[in-house]
Each structure stands twice: as C-alpha cells, then as structure tokens.
Image (tube, rainbow, N blue to C red; front, side, top):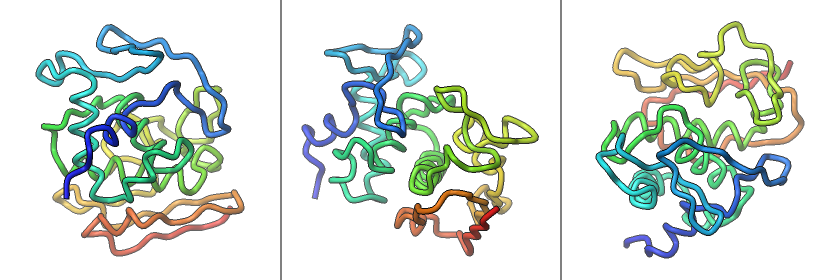
Length: 195
C-alpha cells in the first residue's frame, strides 16, 4: 500500500518551523532552501539536484515504515518533529540515496528524543534555537548533533554501526519510549535513569 502524494507533501512540509513549546520561529536558510508559501525544505545540489520536495518525499518514504503515517500530520507529534528535524535541521543533510541504516537510526533516535522531552534532558540534549543547552563534555556527543549517532551520549553501537544499547538520563516527568525503537533490530536494551 503506497502513501498518497498529498499525505507525503503534508508530512514533509510545515508552514513554519515549530518549537517544542508550540511557538513558531522564522527561518533563515542557505542557498539550498526552497521557500514556497512560507514553507522551507532543504534540497539542492548535495542530493544530486533533487528538489527540496523530492528530497523530503524520498526521505519520508524511507522512514514512514517506522511510524503511523497519521502522526506526521500532527504538528507537535514526536514523529512530525523528528521528520522536520531530519529534513530541515540535521547537519548531515541526508539524501534519500544515503545509507538506509543512517537514515533509519537518525530518525528513530530523533523520535525517541522528542518523545522523551529531550530538550529538557540534564545531559547532552541538543542546542535549542532558544539557546538552551544542557551539560555535555563535547558537543559532538549531543543528541541531534551532526555527529554519527554512535557518538551521541548514551548510544552504544556494534562494529557494523548498528545501535545495540541506549542509555539516557532524564529529569522530566512524562515522556515515553516510542514504538519506533522496535525498528532498531540490534537494540538489546534501553536504559532510562532519572537524575
């Protein structure tokens, strides 16, 4: 069963970048950003000349296998936020032709991050647009950084770069481990500690 193109477009594009607190922010992106009706998507030559929409659609087709497609239409769902991060903010600027393992693992960990209110983690959360940062010995160890996911704090990978263990501390009340972690076939444990 294929995903209808209008659903892909609705999921791939947001009218504005939306922060975790629900406020919208203006964006200022480099030359490889397409702005259309207040929407922005990264595309450009780094993806073999794919338009931003084709890049987003290609990435959506790769990651939709992990999530209920309806979640991508809910602007504050962890899945929507993770997909928006993947196509608009991730420093890796992945293309649909990039490693499926890298695309899958970055998306799943982003869903985990947003599901567990990662912006409030006491250690190695991302640097938010509001400038909030948590303690982290090295910025490359932060979740949602441009580093390989195997370098992110608390993520352990095997020799083939498959995630085998995730250990995060959280100080927030609430959040959940999303179903998407089931898409990490080598994952043997998720350890959540409360600081």
